[in-house]
Image (cartoon, rainbow, N blue to C red; front, side):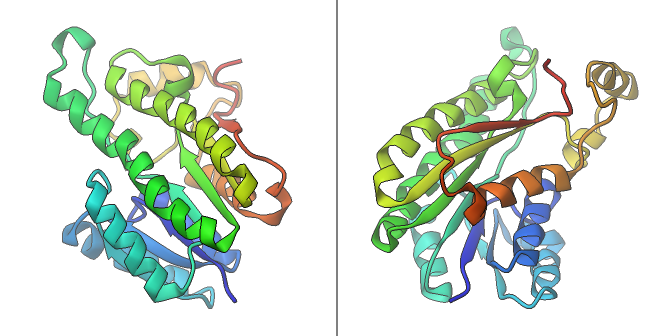
Length: 247
């Protein structure tokens, strides 16, 4: 039976690239979109591009910061495809600002979408994987979670928390045949980074050993490795994909 991957925040950018890469590798793909607008503006196209690889793909609407809604989506994906073999927690937003000026709302919305959603999805999906006695969970963290980043105390806290959850879940689920790993991207060329000031971009590139931003494919390839049989004895790890930004 063809295996199924569920990717959150997969209507565009890194998430869409992950979905297409896993589809190319033979996975059926469940594409999570936050709302109807995201589905119309990217999710449906991503699903169509995934189906071009000869697999099944479908969009599922869900606000992944909502615990109950996540449970409903996991149930729907399981009913549609018969299994959930890979979970990729990719959904994320930014609301940047210096700590001294950051509102409680800015902090809460980022931690709810970027951090709490990972617990929500692992909590509900792990039950499916436990019954299957197999599964792969891949969480998208960030170099901001490893080293911090000025102006992103909310984002850095969320991404650091993901690393802690990854390692804990790996210890809890390992005996059930489930691996849990994280990928920590550096600066990747996406709509989220396209809006950055050019001088700021130049300063960032100056600190990257490879002297360029990463591409979504660089992150998707790392996810594909963790989802593969080649990574069957790898769990609780954080793979930094940053072009040598932090050496």
